[in-house]
Length: 166
Image 1 (tube, rainbow, N blue to C red):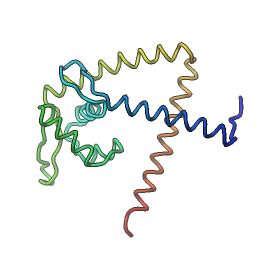
Image 2 (cartoon, helix red, strand yellow; image 1 turned 180 degrees about the horizontal axis):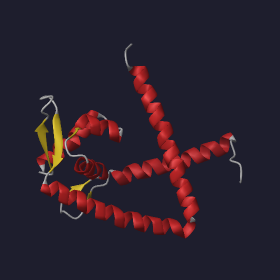
Image 3 (cartoon, rainbow, N blue to C red; image 1 turned 90 degrees about the vertical axis):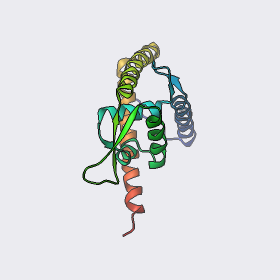
Image 4 (cartoon, rainbow, N blue to C red; image 1 turned 90 degrees about the horizontal axis):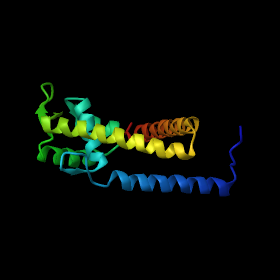
């Protein structure tokens, strides 16, 4: 197996490629699109709706932690989803300050439409990748991405631990 070059020039070039990918993916996830329900949502919004559909009664604070987003960011999306009738909030029986989130029928329909959209898009993306990459290379990419997520999650937990007053 070929060794990776740790030469500074090579490291910077690889980092630049990663930054370019992150920027382009960020633009992609912030683009509004119609998932088949005649209302336009960003990827962040519809993925949050799908998370609520898969976890009925979840709290905004739990979504913020799971999605690695601020409570404010989640609150803005929850407010939009509620305003358009895709979710409802229900007072938690054990803590009346907390509100559990639930999808409405309209919200479940959008979550289902989003799943169909994602499957179709992911199949198309996979076929594009297969033009230049073997299945092994694609699997290796996802392994690297998972490792990156693990590293970043550990760093985030450490930052939170260090930020807590003793």
